[in-house]
Image 1: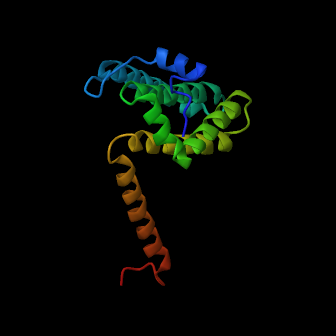
Image 2: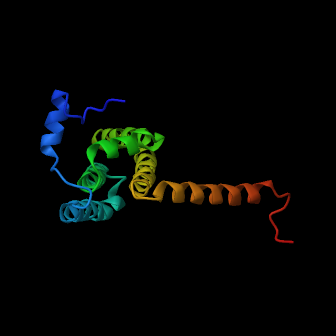
Length: 166
């Protein structure tokens, strides 16, 4: 499967020229840490604006969405571009994240409503957490194991005839 990050295409050569060359042992951990912290700071700055979502959802949506994008961009510093696209393109969470990001920005900019914005933000937060954890070794397996455990617990609660612990 050909990816645009390969050297043969014009877009691939542009992307590879923007991304610094690194070996397997040499990663840009410093740049990763700075970008990751910058993304976290943007998300933390957006938290006080959450109390004003009813009046003006635009600042919260913009700050949170840009912060989450900066966190994902920081992953490029420790994971090669081709590997990153391989990992996140195989997941439906990527599509859900991108749709929720665009929809959240749209609802925030055009004042579509409190409940739409809140629902899309919660979807964006959960998919961002999933994507971030799944990029690390063993993260995807751990997330699937946690989801399976939660699903079994919820299924066990609702399939019982009584909720009383007798």
